Image 1 (tube, rainbow, N blue to C red):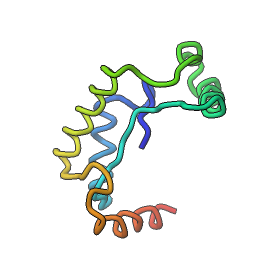
Image 2: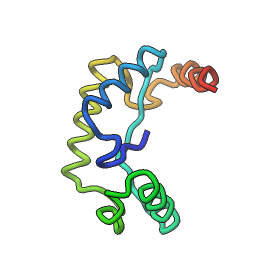
Image 3: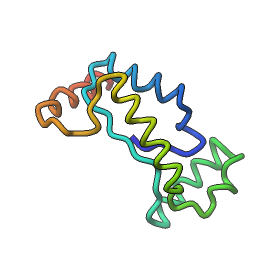
Image 4: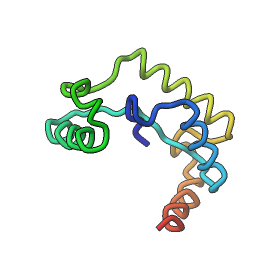
Amino acid sequence: MPILPEITDDPEELDSLFAAARLAGALFVATNVLFLNSAAARSSYLHLLTRHFPHLTEKFKNYTSSSRSYESQIESLCRRLRLKYQLAQGQESQSAVPRQRELFVTCE
């Protein structure tokens, strides 16, 4: 799950998201802070910002990745939330993968 700076990085909202994931039966949550490694990705993201978050467009006009300090804060927050909700970090347990995929089927 990409975490979008100033859009989806609120600690209380992330807490609610992790809780809902666990309640739905998720066994792991993979997260990373948004990085835009191509002009096409940056263009698409700027289009999204312009349409839904115009106040952030100028700030992220030249964004490629966040600072290491910000990434560390988000990693620390997500680590605490994984512990709180007993979720693995990613596909650490291959036995969890088929069960996790079932969650996507039920959401459609």
